[in-house]
Amino acid sequence: MGGKIRITGMNSGLDTDSMVRELVNAYEKQGEKYTKAKTKTEWKQEAWNTLNGKIKNFFSKSVNNMRFSSAYSKKKTSVSDTSKASVVTSTGAVNGSQSLEITDLAKTAYLTGKELKTDSSGKAVTGKTTLADLGYTGGETEIRIGKGAKNAGGTYDTFVTPNIKVDGSTTLEDFANQVKKAGYNANFDESTGRFFISSKESGTVNNFDFVSTDSKSASAMEFLGVKVTNDDTGAYKTDGSDAVIKLNGATFRSASNTFSINGLTITAKETTTSAISLVTDTDYDEIYDNVKNFLKEYNSLVNEFDKLYNAKSSKGFEPLTSEEKDAMTDDEIDKWESRIKDALLKSDSELDTIASTMHNAMLQSFKIGDNTFSLSSFGIHTLGYFEAADNEKNAYHIDGDKDDAETSGNEDRLRAMIASDPEATANFFQQLSQGLYDAMNKISSTSNNYKSFGNFFSDKKLQKDLDDQGKQVTKWEEYVAKMEDKYYKQFTAMESAMSSLNSQQSYISQLFAG
Image (cartoon, rainbow, N blue to C red; front, side):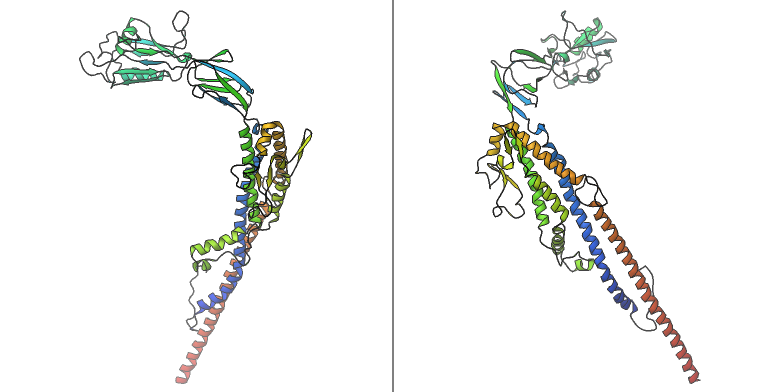
C-alpha cells in the first residue's frame, strides 16, 4: 500500500510482507462493515429516487388532471355518413343533432402548361432551353402573377411582388425557380415537356394566374406555354375555389375543406346529394377510460408499495467484496445483490406513511345533492383478503371491467352512473382526486433538515448518512495505511537491530580467530 518500495527480511530471513499483510488484513476486515454500510445506503438512495419519481409522476399528472372538469367534459360527434365528413368535437360544442350539406369541396389552383417538344432548331426541349431557343425575340419584360379572387370585371386587384423578369436568355428552369420564389409549386417536367404549377394551399384566396404587362410579356407567356386557353393551343388551368357547406341551413365557406364552427371541427370529404346528420353528445367512454386509467396507475403504485414494504428479509445478506465476487458466478452475484436491494424499503416508515395517506384519501365519501357517494357507489372496490393476490390487496377493481378477470362478470355500475348522472360522477371524482392531491401535497411540500420540498422521502437525511459513511470509510482506510506503515517500521527496526547484532558477532568472531 502507499506505493512505497520496501526491502525487508534480508537479515531475519522472515517474509515480512506476508506478515504485515496478515496483520493489516484484520483491520481491513473490520473496515469492510463501513464500506458495506455505505453501499447499502447508496442502493437505498437509488431505490427511493426511482420510487419518488413514480410517485411524483402520478401526483403531478394523473391525480392533478382528475381534479379538473376537463377530464369529464369530453364530447364526441357521430356522423351518419363518415365517407362524406368527419368531426372533431371540443368541450364547448353543444349537445344535439344537426343537419349538414356539403355543396363544394375546396380546390387548389393548378396550371398544366402547353406541351413543348422541340425548340426552334428541332432540338428536344429541356430545363436548360432558353426563351430564345424557343423563338422568343421580344427582349426583357416582366410577367405578373395575379392572386386571390378576381373582381367584378374579371381581373385581379392583388399581385405577387416582385414580378417575374424574363428575356431571351431565361431558361425554363430559371422561370420555374422564380415562380417557386413567388410562393408556388413549380416544375418543368422534361419527360412530358410541360410546366406543372400550383398554389400551395386550396381556396379562392390562393388562386393565381399569369398576367401579361405588355405585348412582349404576352409573347413570352405563349413561348413558355403558360398562357391559359384550356385547349391544345395553350395551358390548362383549374382555378382555386372554396369549400361550401350548409350547417342547419346556414352557408359557410372555407379555403380548405375544414370548418371550425361552434366547437366542431368539420372536415368535408365528398359533396352530398342530401343532408347528413351530426349528433353531438357527452363522450361517456372517455370519462370511463379516464377513471379506469387513473385507477390503473394508482394500483400500479400501491402494489409496488406493498411489494417493497412486505419484501422478504435480507438478514444475513451483505454487499459483496471484490474477493467474494471473484468466488461467485455473475448469476450468483445478481441473485445475492437482488435479495438485498429488494428488501431495502422493507417495513420502511416513510413508505408506510405515503401508502396509508393515499389509501385513506381513497376511502373518502362525499355528499352530492341528496346522496352520499364513495368509490363503492360506482362499483369500485378492493377484493377480499383471500381473493386478492399477494401485495395487491389495496388495489381497486371496477365491476364489469372487461379487462379484469376478477370482476368482469359483475354489473357495470360505473358506466351506468356515467350515463345516468355524468355530473354527479364528475363531481365525485373531482372531489376524490382533490382530496388525494391535497393529502399527497402535504407530504411533498414539507421541507426540513431531513427532506427537500417536492420529495416524498427524506432525501437530505439519506445524503447525510451517505456522506458520513463515506468519511468513515476514508478515515478507516487512512487508519489501515498508518497501521501498515507502523508494522513495516517495526520490522525495519528489527532488521536494523539484527543487522547490527550480526556485525558485532562477526567482529568478535574475527577477534577470537586472530
